Length: 391
Ligand SMILES: Cc1cc2nc3c(=O)[nH]c(=O)nc-3n(C[C@H](O)[C@H](O)[C@H](O)COP(=O)(O)OP(=O)(O)OC[C@H]3O[C@@H](n4cnc5c(N)ncnc54)[C@H](O)[C@@H]3O)c2cc1C
Image 1 (cartoon, rainbow, N blue to C red):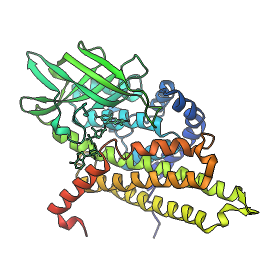
Image 2: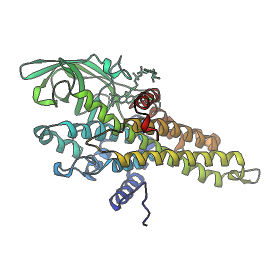
Image 3: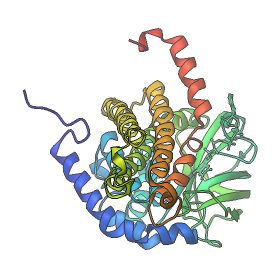
């Protein structure tokens, strides 16, 4: 029987992995530390992802996308995150939170108006769910859209929006914004030039993920044409919950990318560094860091690809495992990055070795896209209702 590679199940997946790995090594790695230090987003590099066809990775081919599946999305995030998680987070916000979400819930007219612009990278997109006083409790959002004639008037503030700004003064180009309407939560496509839409502030001072921009966005009687509402009024709680599944799985992939790199770095370092006249990999405690890290990384990675392989992007229904993957993979990545820093000793604490940056980046993954406490809550709720999911 032919063996299937769980992590690159088809020749197309294997080719995609090699293409992204080469691009990441040649183009992304050399700029990563500088953009992290300077808290800058590399827009020209981002646009190269459009030339490679990666910005529409899950968009069906009839709309000009790559037409690939959740496993492909996982592969791209894993490879980019192994060299630059900050840049990868900007990719995730654009490609998963805007493009995938938009494409799956838009009508033909909306797809025709916007897809080319975002798949080429001409426009940078993001998704606005979180508010200053509503994060985990997202359904407690206060932003409101009131319909008058052919427009909705949107009022509210959105917080921590990735790609919300491209630099200190420039708004991102296009956003999928959730807000309350008469019939419940609806979502709207909002362009940067819409009157009443502005950059509240670009948020400085993040511990990690500094190569992606985070911003607070403000909507003051922002006029949004009715034709920019996605789906029917009140339908978007479902859009939001469904898209969280691919978001969580791709954040899981960012985590395995970080862990893979950390295992590589610590293994190499432990055979080159000597103490007491021998390589430090001869010491049992160092072996424990390396052995535990590799095994925990592979366990999380296996769960990740198993879940992604069963996901349908059109009919999501994997909440328990998308939460499970993110819970396991993000906590694993943080621990593995910490193990790597310990193996590298004092050198690990400096930016000369990539571990220092990955260690800072890893922490965000336990918070963004849902906190680990939210995943524990969701898993318990789902299993309590469906004990058959356990075995
Ligand atoms: C760098 C960055 C980028 C982000 N990008 C985006 C983006 O692009 N778009 C977007 O919409 N959002 C984005 N976010 C927001 C992110 O999703 C939220 O920060 C996250 O959902 C947590 O919300 P909060 O920060 O308001 O924390 P809170 O919800 O206030 O949580 C605070 C603490 O209370 C805990 N808690 C809350 N409720 C419960 C409960 N019921 N049971 C147990 N514990 C609970 C939490 O787990 C956490 O430990 C981003 C955040 C960051 C930091």
